[in-house]
Length: 99
Image (cartoon, rainbow, N blue to C red; front, side, top):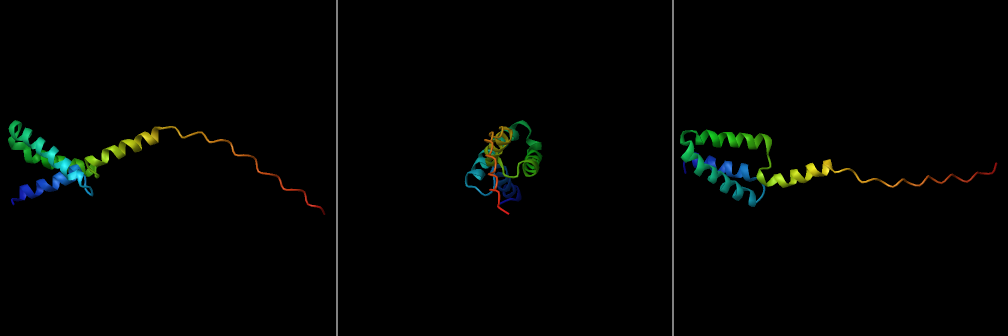
């Protein structure tokens, strides 16, 4: 295997998401689709595009593409107003003690 192919596999895993089975598959499909387009449109810059994609994913999306739904759920959970709590009953006053 050439170093380019080995690095491409690393980018697949990083883009898709580490720690899952589905992440690298999604990353491989997405990166290869991008490669198919880029090698026709900008063949000399393809390797730079792949390196830039890797850097962006590592910096801004460390969980890869598969982490996006969880991030969206978390964002909506933060924006959802907290449920109103019912007022708690007043504490009972202690019975007066006889001297």
